[in-house]
Length: 410
Image (cartoon, rainbow, N blue to C red):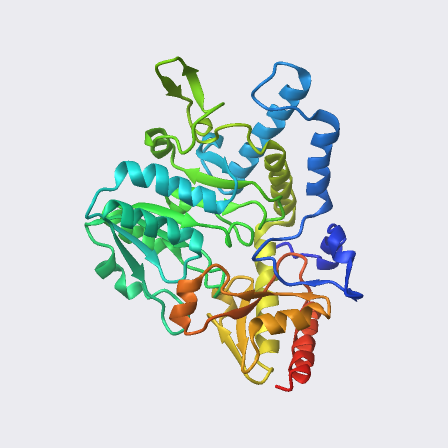
């Protein structure tokens, strides 16, 4: 298997040569949004500088070039996640919009009062709030697969929770807080046994490990470009084609129609039916370049690198007195996230003091307040890793924590 040459990888990321407060930057917040390699920045700049024009609108050269690059990006992304054809890839602004698209379009069209939706206790708000709103609006029951003390899902409850009344099951493949890697197979098998539709939030999975939606056999799969070396403003919803064809549009306007008269409109075929207005085509092309970059690295190598970094981080952080680490302690079932709390130090104070050392971590509830309620804490600190993370940065984090403890006399 290929291995990552992290030193060479880092040369592709201009921002990593910057100084923060006079210190070399240590960026440990990639779970929120990753940094961008020069290859992605250059791909987007080429469009703006040399061939910019609206796609699907013109018969002149710039428009045709842009349309071709846009279509190529959709095909690359389909191949990257094992989708059967480009038409199953819908571009959205981000994973949040993709999940809302399913809730608003599929959910409102096909779920009825008394139906049940099953999600988990570890979900990001993006895969929690849309279902909560839909359940209240439509008289649905919302149920939760609980967590074990180790931060795993309690799969022994599946038969109890996923019943013949269950019409939709949605879960994150990897937790953005605990780092827990969920095996989708048992959940999907149980959902299939009762005829439920399956939605997977892959925001923390697609950037970090090989994903094949056909092998997984989910109905919908959502992820964001900005977490996988791509730009902001572009996300992806994969959907099985027969479901996308049956669903009403999420937004209406230009480009998602085939014809409009004063009396009626007819909708375009998927995926254009769900892409009203001028699309974020430059961002989509940037995401295509990010897919090229990750493909060249090899997703098995990306996963192996992060597993090694997580293992090292767990070991180093366990040395710090008064540290509580949340989530699985086995790096084989943990993504590139380390969430923790320090006795007597608020996460926001810690993050502020670490920033003085050029170290960027996340502090707060990480858009997962129900999970923090379940964990019995108001906020946590989170360090998260990616292809450019080195063990020396974990050492810098630990050293920074000791400095913060000394400053706060903890």
